[in-house]
Amino acid sequence: MASDGNKVQSKKGMGLVTEVFDARAVADELPGHIAVGHVRYSTSGSNRPVNIQPLIANYSRGLVAVAHNGNLVNARRLRRELEAAGSIFQTSTDSEVIIHLLARPENAVAEYLGLCRVARIIRGAFSLVVMTRTSLMALRDPWGFRPLCTGRIGEGYAIASETCAFDHAGASFEREVEPGELVIVDSGGIRSVRCFAPEEICPAHCVFEHVYFARPDSVVFGDSVQEVRLRLGRELAKERPAAADVVIPVPDSGNEAALGFSRASGIPFEMGLIRSHYVGRSFIQPGQKVRETAAALKLNAVRSAVAGRRVVVVDDSLVRGTTFRKTAAKLREAGAREVHVRISCPPHRFPCFYGIDFPTRTELLAYGRTEEEICRFLGVDSIGYLSVEGMLSCVSRPSGHYCTACWTGRYPVEPEDNMGDKLGMETGSAIDLSDPERETGPAVMARPGGGKP
Image (cartoon, rainbow, N blue to C red; front, side, top):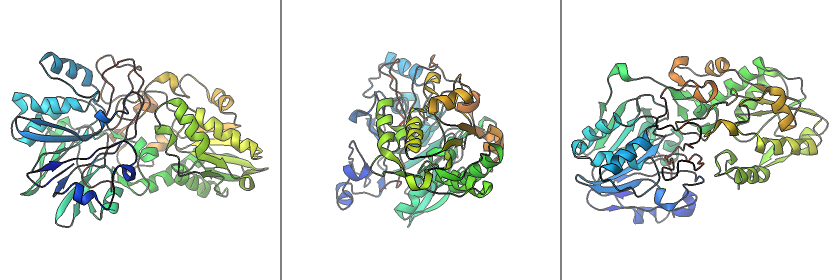
């Protein structure tokens, strides 16, 4: 969506960015000096065009567009209250709650004041970009669950959820939007407003951004993602060593951890699994059957690297396990003598309510199972997870500044509305509010502003 200050035009579509947008024609299709974009991966129950962001609406103060990364834990209650007051919802995503709150008479004041008021009503994870005809605003929740950062592009400004987006757009990274901060960009330049008092700021950065979600060429929460993953691998080798002949990663998100494990252990590193880049990230596919099919097609074992050898397979995480079981079988078929699994984060035993696809305990492999039982399920010789303490030693901020809820069950913000384990969460954000029993999965944010080409 783009604005020249008067006219606003938008374009949305299902599929990859390159399938929806023609890079040669996009400037002609979306002219203007202010723009906001959003990319997400589709999920069961919500892969519908009406849920594509940015969500756009006209209200008493004019046009507004919202792009959201995160999950609101009180969205269902707020939606019920808004509907009872006469609001009519067009989508099933929790992000639409934000627009309806902005439109309420008590919040329909100067845009940034209204947005600050809304920020104090909604709860959970929200890294937001809000665009009007003449301004762009970026808001981050007081816990700072999801990343959000600012940059410069020529004489202008850019906002993105990962710094790597700036590299592609020809922008330079400046700083993170602080938890609880609202950044406003308009004709007067850039300025900042604090929507929360200092005592209300409780940092709870999602460590899984470093483990898996973010790209290795990004800087997230002040740390290089690649460097953190190398450190995770080195710490894993210290905590959970294995007698083996070769270390191989599960590409691509396991590459850096495997390299760190190899360097710390002295066991040679080889690419024993080859990934097809025509298949997306299987963890974030909509539904288990689709995930399993994607995983089966995505990876293939290199016989010359593993045949007759004791293999350590390093992966960033092991959530459901059914897809990795296929990978372990392929390594056996390729002649691996032993298969030892090492995971560069702790075992996932609790659902995430802030924007990652761990919606129910029962689908988590480590929930209620011992390591021996997990080994039998996967068909491997051993498994070793990194400890919570070891993981937190690999990031630079104080350990109390990170959310570890999916590993420890300690939630910085308790979910409301009896969400329990049944309600799936999405990043991007799209809790399917039309059906409380519907299983949903995640959708990734926007790289708002100039984030994705």
